[in-house]
Image (cartoon, rainbow, N blue to C red):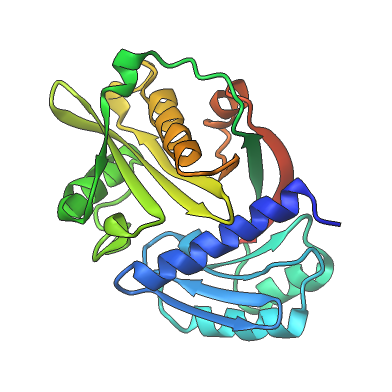
Length: 250
């Protein structure tokens, strides 16, 4: 049966394939229901072997894991739902000992928008010409090591038809980022982050709402995101609800 979780998962997998097709060092492969997606960013979930179903094909997933593992970037194995012993054993054979949950949240287009117009005016779209500024702000907002995102947002990523990048600014200074990816009639919300000095003033909500509003204007009737523990209360206050919990080995 096609559920909300199935639809949001399919949209996410389409978004990852799309990103791998436009990011400068992207690579993507399929075998059965298993997939391999590599961006060469220094983030394990952006170099990932995964299965698109709730009952992973372990042989195909193992083959995809071998492909991703030999790419030389920090990487992970990801499955929908609670991972069984077979997946855990497979991850261990590939040297992936860390295990964590990854909540998938979704909402309909009909949500309560609470950020004021003045706040949303601090958020603007950015194209590929500003990818260096976007990447620098993204790195600072996530408090990641310099170079962690590599060329992830380089090339034509921010000019791709289905991808929109957002930069929030306070007093003319970059203060936050967002990214909307439209696939399968829904919008995926990514890269929501605010630099430490600008947190607590509603910028995260303003960026997220801008991504949603633009996605709906482009025809999306729902949205999804993967949430951190810190960001989840904000998203739930906006109407996002947990639809599935994935397992990541890294």
